[in-house]
Length: 143
Image 1 (cartoon, rainbow, N blue to C red):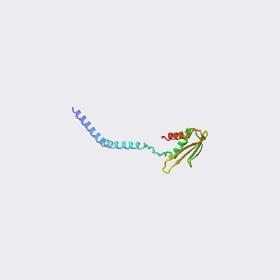
Image 2 (image 1 turned 90 degrees about the horizontal axis):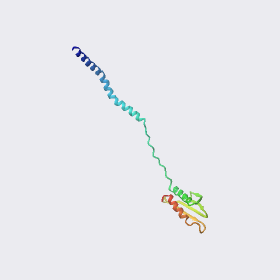
Image 3 (image 1 turned 60 degrees about the vertical axis):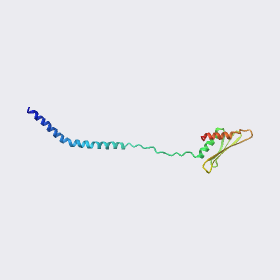
Image 4 (image 1 turned 90 degrees about the vertical axis):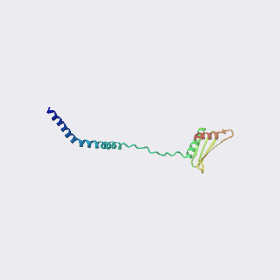
C-alpha cells in the first residue's frame, strides 16, 4: 500500500509542474486570440469595397424641342410630307395633296410654347386637316 501514495504524489507533482508552465502561455493565447481574430477579419473585410452608383442627371428635352418633335410627328401622322424645317424661325412647311401646310412653333415670354397649324389649298380640299393635326399633336404631347 505504500506504493499508492507515491503515485498520487507524483501525479500531483506533474500536474502542478505542468500547469505552472502552461498557465501564462494559455492566458496569453486567450487574451491575444480575439484581438488577432478581429485584426484578420477587419483586414479581409477592408478589401471588400462596394462602390455605390453615382446618381446622374439626364436633362430632359426642352419644351421647345418636345413641341417641335410632336408637331412634326403630328403632321406626318396626317400624311403631310415635310418640305422644310427652320428651327431658328420656328417654321415647319409641308404639303398634302394640293394643300400647303405651315406649322409655327414659338416660345413665348413666359416660357410656354405656342404651336399653330394652318392648311391652305383650293376650295373643296380637306377643311379639317389643321384640326386633325392639332389633335394628333395633343395626343403626342400626352394631353
